[in-house]
Length: 147
Image (spheres, rainbow, N blue to C red):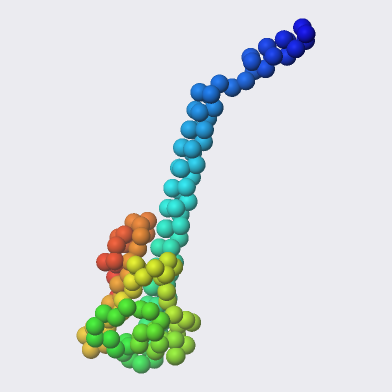
């Protein structure tokens, strides 16, 4: 009987209180939320990097088209770049663009547009970004690329 009391006293002295456990869980929760926010920001930045890379590939394809044809593809009004649009089909058919350019999210929220200007002597591409991570660009749909 004496040994059982010693074992019980040993267990009581070495355990954690409910408050200590709650504090530990709260700290773990805060750390987990910080990690989740960081991962979310990294995903947004990666999508923005992909968008800018796509726009630069499109700019390069348009430059090659202009060299071959002495003009840019004609599009009098700003048309969304969907892969089925006239400009994309022209660049793809001439093998200047490997395939359609699509937004990484595919939600339709971030739209790219193309419009030729000055009798097809120049053009304007607009695109959207999620973050202000990329220098010189804003987190909205007012970003532009010209030749």
